[in-house]
Image (cartoon, rainbow, N blue to C red):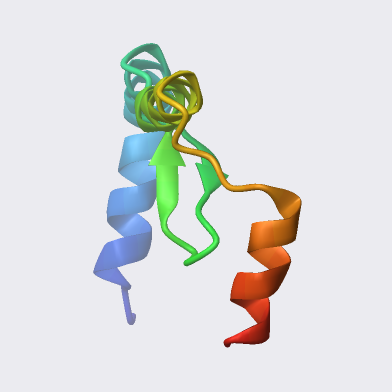
Length: 77
């Protein structure tokens, strides 16, 4: 009889509810992936909110670019 250890462990985890407990803990700690960057990196809820707040601060500080300047910059790419 060929027993796959990974299948046995997964079965054990599911039967004991450990997977669901871990999933709840991850969600409660804001570790669930909620978004991805344009580079494909995942962001947790905490990281996502941090990036939003960073962007808002940059706007408040005037760190923006006009549409016209953006088009000029794109022409150099």
